Image (tube, rainbow, N blue to C red; front, side):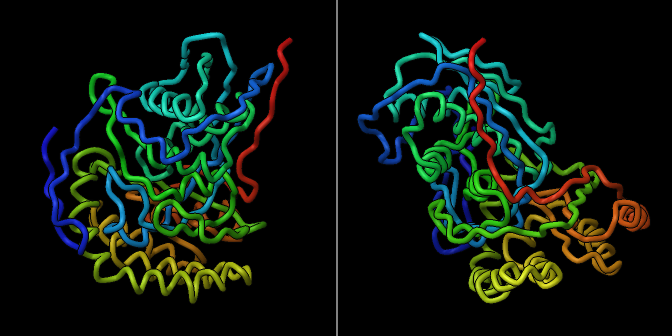
Length: 360
């Protein structure tokens, strides 16, 4: 693949070779490799992980495909990926449409914990790929927890998130993978539920229940702009980094001084005001403008209609609305703006659900 030039900001005066490789190569143990006492369970581990809305990265100058981090904020929603894992004597059997990304993490996990047996894995995601709902990170955290539970839980939830973040990949051509961008927002939100605030290097700084008793509606505007691959890379590593160099201090200030107090008080409208300000700041502005100004027009119409919390997830184009208004009323507002409800759900404030099904 081509060598991409990285411009803008204070940490990116380099070139990055965006290379693909076979699953299982270039494993990063993250300092977690040691002798663990493994006690494989008799049965199938079933994990359900909620997807996430990724509201913003705090500073894209602090992450790249070979360095997870950058901070960010997001929340879990009632849209789910599931994973089922059983230990076997040998071999790795994977029943999933995007096998390479799972195979790579399985090899990373086996290497770190020293597991020499096999796994039988079945995974199902929420089927909304590359629209900003984190299908890759959600399925990976589900599988990671299923693998860990299946061999006796040698790693903590924080260690699992670290291992996943350092070995986060997206699939490329011919069954290969390449390291992707990972802030840690998705795995943290999926693990713990609610709203999470991440610092650099995948550190979970703050977590709080969010919008309890409220509704979440997601609209997915039509867009012919890719949110994955080379165009996404160019967006994140150039314009977004330049804008975050200018606005990262303001975004962090807004999170600390306004968003977190609003979450503590359960003030949805105030939280929505903060997110609306962030939509025009730093890398978030670059992500929205990546799809053209039509996304801003949509979100402004929803805000003007009085909806409390409106924001685009990740690099889009999905728009999340959090409100106490009923579905019929919100559907009418979206229709007047040229949108429709694609998903009606709630915030998931519980996080992962893990159970073991005994063999019959």
